[in-house]
View 1 (cartoon, rainbow, N blue to C red):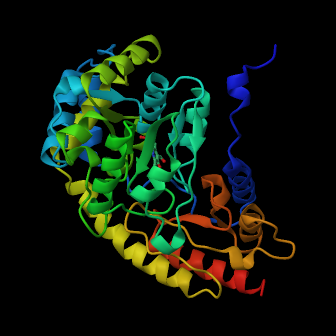
View 2: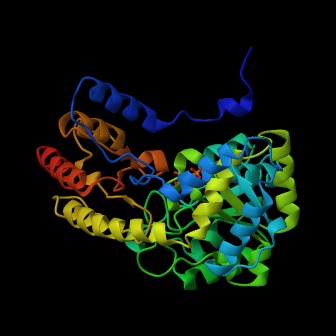
Length: 391
Ligand code: PLP
C-alpha cells in the first residue's frame, strides 16, 4: 500500500545522518564533543522528581481530563498572569504532551488545505513539517544576519497574502538565539491585527533571555491576546524534556478544539508527570534562573571564541542556548555546503554540530552550548584548528 500524500511531503531530518555518524564514531570509542543537544545539560530538579514519585505512590496513575489536571491548568494560568502579565482563565489553558504536540494541534485546528503560515527563516525544523502535515503552506521570509536575525513588522507585512492564516513567532529563537524587542513586538502585533492573522507565539525559551526580560506578545493588549496562541513548556525551563509536558493558552474556543483533538488521540498528558510539573511551577522561576546564569557565561565565551576564528562571524545571541555562526567562508572546494562542513568537522575535529540548512539557512552551523564549559572550550578549539586547516 502506498503511503498517504500527506506523509510523503515530510522531509526526513537532515540532522539524522550526522547524528547517526556521530553515534557510530562514539560507539567505536572516538571522543566526540557534541554541540547538537536541544536540551539543557542539567538534571530535572529533585523536588520535581519527588512530586512525581509521590503521585505514583498515591496511585495517580489513571486517566485524567483530556486537557490535563485542573490544578495544573490553574497553576499555568497563574504563572502566565504573574510572570508573563497575561490574564487567562484555567479554561483558556490546556496541558499538552510537549510544546511540539501543542504546536501540531494548533496547526490542525487552524489550517485548511493551501492556507499559508509565515515562518521566518532560520526556523525551528518542526514548524514547516507540521504545517505540511496539516496541508498548509509555509512562507519563509529570510531574516538578516545584519539585523541579528530579529524579525521585523516590515518582513511580516511583506509576506502576507490573502491566504495567510497565521504567523509563527519564536522569541528567544531556536536556532539563532535572537530576541525580538518589545517595541518590535508591538509593531508586529499591529500588522497581525490589521491583516486579521493569528499569532502562534512559541515561548519555549522564555526563561533564557539574557538582556531584556522576556515579553509575551499576548501581554501587549486585550486585542492581541484574542489573536494569540501562547505556547510554553516545562521541557527547557525545568530541564524536563523527557517528561513531555507543555501548554497552550488562547481564547476558549481554540482550547476547546485542541481538547477535542487530545480526547480523540492521546487521551491526556501522562498523569503522574503532571504532578511533577505542578511542583515545578511552585519554584517561581528559581531553577531556570540558576541555568540562565550559567548559560550567560557559556554564551559569552562561545561567541568570542567563534569570532576569533578567521572567516567566522557569530552574532551574539540574546537568548536560548544556541550560537549560529556564519561559516560560509569555509564553503569552498570539496566542501560544497554546510552539510559537507558538518561532516568534515565530525571527521576532522571530532565535533558534532547541526548544519544551518536544517533550519532553512545555508552557510551556517548551530552549536548548542548546553554542555559543560570544558567541552565548550575544547570543542571550539578543535573547530578552530580544523577550519583553519581549510585555508
Ligand atoms: N519549540 C522550539 C523552538 C524548540 O526548540 C523545541 C524543542 O527543541 C520545541 C518547541 C519542543 O518542545 P517540547 O520538548 O516541549 O515538545
